[in-house]
Structure formats: C-alpha cells, structure tokens
Length: 412
Image (cartoon, rainbow, N blue to C red; front, side, top):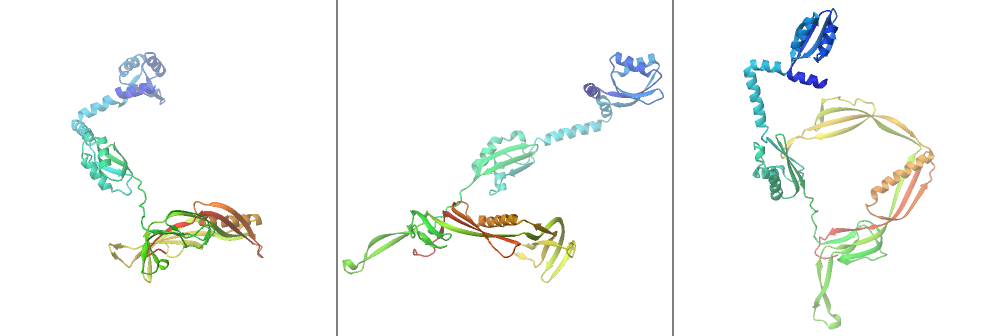
C-alpha cells in the first residue's frame, strides 16, 4: 500500500467526495476492477471522502454512473499538477533552475580551509604551504590533488609527523599530528646532590668523582658526586724531590650516576567522633563589580551576600592595552550557599578516617618510584575521648641524587 501511494504521488492523485445511496456498491465495484481507494472516511448523509490515483479517476466516473453516485474533485496532489503550475510560471521555473545550477557550481569550489591538531606549529604556515601546493580558497575541487598537498606540507613544514587533507562540502580540513620532540638536553657542568636526607645504601658513578660511600648519612643538599675530574699534570717549585708539590688540572663535566639511600617518612592524621563542617548546597549567585583603590561599585547582582552562610570566590580582570594597565579592576564574584552538617563516627570509624588522612598526607611526600622496606603504624592516646590520632612511619630505599649546576670556577 505504501509503495502504491508513493507512485500515486509521483504520477498524481485526486481527493474526491462521493455522494449517493450506494456507496458500498461503489467501493466494491472499484476494488473488483483493481482501482485503489485509500484514506476513505464516511461523512454521513450518504457522503464519503477518499483519495484515488490520477489514472483511476476516469474509470471511477463510469462506476459512479452505474451506481447512481456523484463524484466531486476537492483536491489535486502530485508531481503532474505541480509541474503544470510551474509551467505556467516560467520565470519561477527559470529562477529555480538558475538557483540549482548556481548551487551546484558554487559547491564545486573550496571556500574555507581549516587546520586541526596544531599546538606548537602555526596554522598560517600550514595554510601557506597548502596554497603553494594548490589548495586555497576559491580553488576548483577537481583540480586539487590531495595526496600531493599532503606530501608538500609534510616536506616543507618542520615538526609534522603526519598530515591528512579531507574535503567536506566546500570546506577543506587539514589535520596534522605534530612530532613529539625530546626535551632539550642540558649539558652544563653539574654536581649530583642529595634531594633529601638519608643513609646511603649504594653508589654508582658513571661520570664524576664520588664524595660519599655506602653507610654515610647525608643531609638535604649535600654533595654526593662531584661534577669534576682531576689529573696530575706535572710538578711545581724548585724544592727537593720529596717536597715537590703536584699540580692537578680539573675538568668540569655533568656528573652522572645513581645514589640510593634509606629514607624515613612520618605522617600524622586525626579525626573526631563528632565533627562539624560546612557543605555546599549547590545554590550560587553571581555578581559583577567595578573596583578602584578604596571604592567598589556593584554593576550587576546583589550588593550583599544573599545567603546567611556562604563561601565567596572572586575573579579579577584588569583591563589594559599593551603596556598600559588601568587602575581599574572588574571583579566577578560568586556566592555559594553552605549549610552546617554534623558527622558522627564510631571509635573504629574515626581511627580509620585518621589513618586515611595520614596516608593521604604521606602519599604527597613519597616519590613516584621507591622500594618500601618497613612500615609501622601507631595510635596516639589522648585524653580527649572525641579525638583519634594516628602516626605512620615508613622506611624506603630510593634515588636521592639530583643535578645542581656548577656556578663557581672550582669544584667543591
């Protein structure tokens, strides 16, 4: 049925009103002759409305005469009727043809060039390279060789690992992937010093002169491996052989090596069985103000905080132009409503919360890589029954050597 209606729309259909006392016989005769009627609705008083294809209308008139019914056309739909109306309006037809031709012609050109994926590189530089390769605004799309444009951009713009060019409609999209450059290598002469205090466990020297050995206690900032190497270059003075002083020539370099040490950490945490704090409700109000030294004017929003309990956050914008900074500040104020809440914990829950807080503080001190050797946790007794306190001790073995650039002319 859907396909029949679709073809009726293509070839045209008519909306008719049939009047007579033999409407059922009219419908049966039409169906027996293969004439399709759809959207049939009875209007009462021996009247009905239906839709019929344009080709079936003439045979229906014969059936109407035989059944004593009358047919009245109330609407015409479909391509033939639309085409007929258009033919009578030749200027409209010509305008439509010109519009579609112009639309087709204009869609055959590239009207915008976009670059995606740029962070360090300049999008203008990439667009300039694309224009040299033939991809630019106003270019006919069939004249653009996308592979050649990609190769030209990749060869003439430094820092590109991959480039892809795609045309969507009238837009040309250049997507690039930048090369990941290694961090610049620092070759300045430097010592290796202790980043933190500890007990030296292992010393490995690749370049430089070791200053500490296994078993030494070192403090933060203490020299571990000197960034200099010395060699005897001769003798000085006119003294006797046994009193002659040897001359040493130092060569400064960037010390390289590893110093691992035992390091101890300590963290403290506490929690109350009954704790009162403030929690945000989710409601907030914004205000804008103009501020100069000593004065403030509200431009928009409330002049006073709209909540009895609140937190306030201010963002300050200072207008200026080039090196000229005006003594005026635009302040964006955000008031966030809070309400008091009471947290009740058991003794075990308070101890667990204190331990969690101690570990949270400890994690901020620990390095990314370490070897844990020992761990100890101690609950600290207190006379306050509402308070639980915990201390955590950790012993690790970790790398403590960090470079420090040599600023003096002689090694330390």
